[in-house]
Image 1: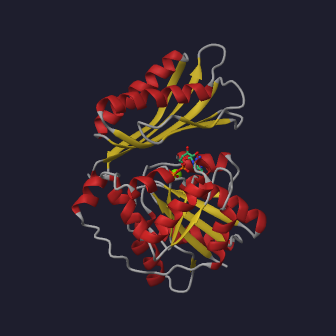
Image 2: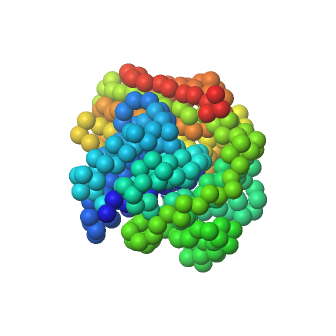
Length: 353
Ligand SMILES: Nc1nc2c(ncn2[C@@H]2O[C@H](COP(=O)(O)OP(=O)(O)O)[C@@H](O)[C@H]2O)c(=O)[nH]1
Ligand SMILES: [Mg+2]
């Protein structure tokens, strides 16, 4: 079997967490599997791939470009995995991406006929955003969410651990009604519930290869995308004396960014902060919106003396302002924890440019 699936879905919907859970479960139950993290930032070992490898998942990354537009890189990677005995490979696309059904699935069928078994085109959504769509309250973001869902053969309502079973089923039913071409399942990548069903869908389901009526030039969709800024920062931090709480440090950065973004009236759909020590201990903090609590996704086991940090943010905020906010937040938290920084990389760009 050479099964390949694209996992689409909005920023923070849980693509990385779900692909990690799926890849692990698949390897335990069925056979070798791998995941690819696709990011627009340049360089190597960005946050998602670093997280997957720190977590012991068979993973790699494609950076700099959406897999929509680099089929040579994608197919070389896939072939490497299948030659290595993998049965299933999943890749995400950048979290505001729309159009991978056309560009990736139809592109592979056209240019590499018969080489891959395309599993259902999978789109993740989290309850909060599904609820915003249901209430027609999603603002600009709703244009991206709807366009993504229209591409789906399989809609995965993730984070169902945050809902009661009845609430989850109601939301699942609403999605199924709105998107009748798709199967809709509910899972929790965090608890593992439903991941087996997702694995079955990968094994037995096939892509419909539909051509959904999405107007990619639609000005609302374009406007929503144009406002997004993508930001990457990587540095090394060393404490000048004693040790420090790495998790608290990351949370301090996140809280400062949150306060400033909120004061400015901007939204930050996903801010991730990942840090690890020389021995592989790591911590992760996520923020999924100015009005949501800072999430400690994983705590360091031990106090830290030196850490490597990767920060990745997606925000609807001018690029220069996001840079100023992040720089200030990192400086303030680093001073508080008495850290000296060595910055390796900073990159940010507005997606409309
Ligand atoms: N409660 C809960 N949180 C989740 C679940 N899946 C992912 N998350 C959290 O949602 C945030 C975004 O997840 P991530 O996988 O990075 O999303 P991505 O941007 O779509 O790749 C992180 O803080 C995750 O820990 C889930 O099933 N339940
Ligand atoms: Mg991700």
